[in-house]
Each structure stands twice: as C-alpha cells, then as structure tokens.
Amino acid sequence: MNIDVSLINKRAPYHVNATDNNNNLDFVTDYGVQYIVGFDKDDTSLSFVTYQFFITNANNVKSPRDPKLRKTITAILETFFQQNNEALLYICETGDGKQSMRSRLFEFWYNHYEGRRMLMFLEASVVDAEGVVNYTALLIRKDHPHLTEVVTEYTNTVKLLSEKPQE
Picture 1 (cartoon, rainbow, N blue to C red):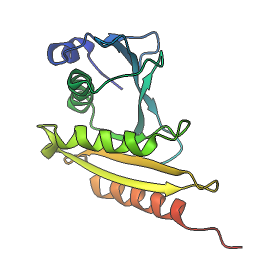
Picture 2 (picture 1 turned 180 degrees about the vertical axis):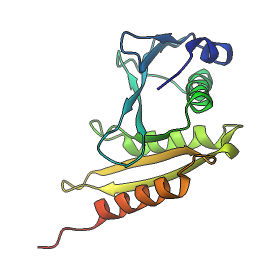
Picture 3 (picture 1 turned 45 degrees about the vertical axis):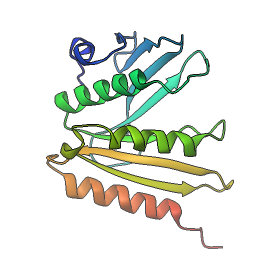
Picture 4 (picture 1 turned 60 degrees about the vertical axis):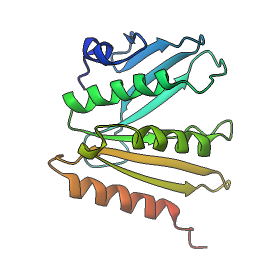
C-alpha cells in the first residue's frame, strides 16, 4: 500500500504524521483528541487485495462535532484512492455500543465528499450470534479492474454472514 503523507497534508486541516507502522497515520485535533487512522491488509474476507480501514480515538478524549476531522479523514481517503486502486472495508467498532452512530457519521462524511462520484459505497449490517449489530461498508473506485467481482463477493459474504445457521 502506498500513501504519501505530504499529499494528505496539502489538503488536510490537521497535520497528519506517519507512525512507526507504515500503514498507520495519526493527528491531533484542536480539542486534544489524538486519532490513529490505519489501513490493515485484509487477508480473510475477499479474494482481491482489500484493506480494512479504521479510525481510533487513541486517547479517548470526547470529540465534539468537528468539520476539520471530516476534512482530514476525507483527505486521507482521497490520497489513498489516488495512489491505490484497492478495495477498502470499513467495519465499525462495537465495544461501546456506538457502532450505529459511527456508521451514520461515516455515511454522512461520504455523502458530503465532493469526489464521491468516482467511488462506490456499499453499506451493510450483520447481526452476530450475540445479537450485536455490526456495520460495515465497502469503498472502491468505480474504475477498479475487478469492480463487479469485488462487489459480488462482498455482497455474497454479507448475505452468508446474515443467514441464521441451520440447527
């Protein structure tokens, strides 16, 4: 995976740094919230090169609504897709029960992204065995060489995970 932090910083209102892990980035907001943003290669889900995208509030400081946060995340994703024609999976963290809110926020950010016409955004939710709703999204460039196959595999995987096991 390739991502040029200097290109991100030309667009992002917050200064973004590369971390020791080459696929992670971090920045601190005006409110003192430290975010780590990362791209982990996902070897388990799809047959094509896919990265799991995550955003972590590293110091657990409460974050007010911050338009500079959205613009920084957008700059990171835009740079990723300019330099990589790979699929991104976004899976909302469920540990604190706020996954629905995270999913709505990510969708809001996408809907307010000016370059969204070049991307396909597919959302899904799956209820696990404990009854927890897991939210996921696939982001992929519309000119991906295997767009149809990736979308089909994602859709089939979500469908399979949504089916109740036979007893």
